[in-house]
Length: 226
Image 1 (spheres, helix red, strand yellow):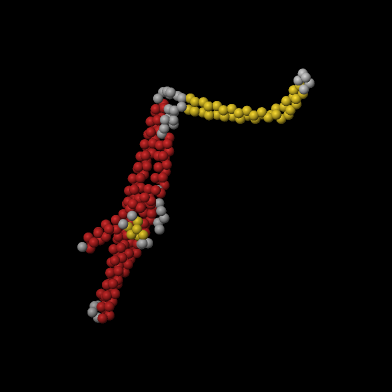
Image 2 (tube, rainbow, N blue to C red):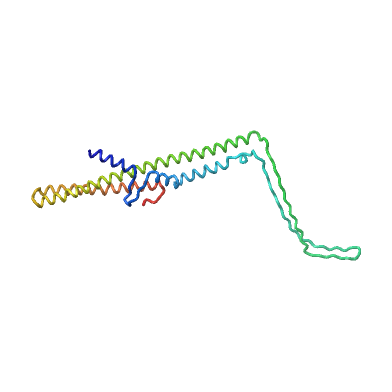
């Protein structure tokens, strides 16, 4: 019966991990945090998006190439003219401004199948980026689930041990009272206190294991351990 109750406690705890700070962490919340903040997945998503944007006919050389150019020229000159009627024109620092613009287009209709090979390569790179995102998502999801259930299991074990510790302390107090009233031997109280101390040591060890499990879960979620 005790084993069945203990297993039931673990199952209930796996459904919703109750943290000592009176806050609940669900599996979905843990997965959301991991999938949004893990650096490896962010990098994979960025790479996949770059490959998707580059996978277009223009990048493969299938569209016309348009060039636009413009220029601006500034020059200064001096004028010294003398006409037959005796008129003389002398000017220094005359500024001449010139501007021009050009628009050109070229279109390679066939380059020996190179453009089709390039388009296939761009498509392959896009597919590879999507596969990397999928693989990284599966890896992070799996590791986060394992860490979550591991922390839930350690939490359930700690809760069970804490109940046993409280029970053993109550039995030790009862044994002390019975020893004082003479209804039980002093050795019974000694055994009860020894059992309580053993449970206390196990609780301390289990608390350490739970702390390590929480740190592992926090790492998967990419959040501080607290």
